[in-house]
Length: 280
View (tube, rainbow, N blue to C red):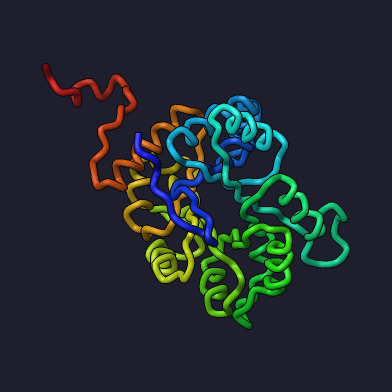
């Protein structure tokens, strides 16, 4: 199979599909019960099986946090395939004095560096409290991006706020990309889908979109068709999967949409669809 298309972020070649990790680590955006199911099901080997499918198809870029189970899974998959995973880590850290010592920015950036991160983006839980809409600035962002650069990592913004994109561009913040929620039903998005579409189209840097299937609320053909057909060639789609078969499916569907083909994927079967089958 052909290698998955690539783009460049901060001088680094990355796959346009990014491996999401919420469905590895237990963040379902559905229920506490679903979160518990994910964490009870996923082991380092199970996660490595999924990452291996992505690597075998040229999808070598992963976004997430530095949990030990994920670090172990990445190493297993790299050993199996001989291919390096390009990691995007999104740490949270103290932005005011008096927080937990282990969550000081220096400590968190050191941890990401030690874990081998290529990219380091302050997580939305940190980024979005720094956004000052009144004055049109992202407070202290230059301090944090300088610390990231000093550790040999590439800075960006993990954010749920579209204002982060426009403010970063208008102020010339030292970031190379921005994470944005983007899906056809506007799930977890702050503004309407057409407004977010315009923000992405006008962004000065490549955009990493997340939640294309709205955390399971959209079927993969629907969510992926929308995302791939409404972003730019330099932009990316982050996709979370729970099993190797799901990884294969989203890769195959994405190739179809990128090459302007209607997918011919295997559909799920129920008895009520019997008469929809072609008659022999």
